[in-house]
Image (cartoon, rainbow, N blue to C red; front, side):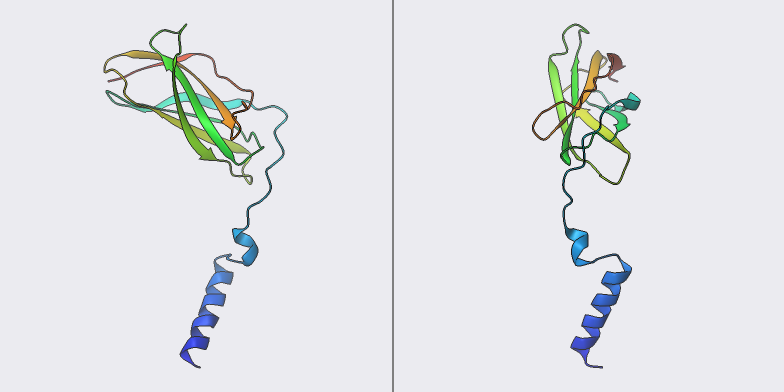
Length: 139
């Protein structure tokens, strides 16, 4: 077998075995928006250091645009959550849930912060779920 034909055959076989078909790279249209989005796990502190923290939570898949943002509203006063961090995520339409993670930076060491979380789609429209106020303390 000629070398070029051998390369083509191997490429086709490997592509088939790995699920690589011309349709596999195509983007799907946005999923239908969920009728009711709710937080099913968390929010909780994933990790904290002296000047940063990561908050994680899980909700049922909100649907809509694949582009979403995890939003963290926080501050040192529970009545004034004036700081905001956001983290870009991409929804997986094949999953029934979504895990959101957002990092807060430039925090003060040994300080208690109050926070609430939300998620929004690419246009900034809320998914309609906001957590109760929680706390974490930096190291």
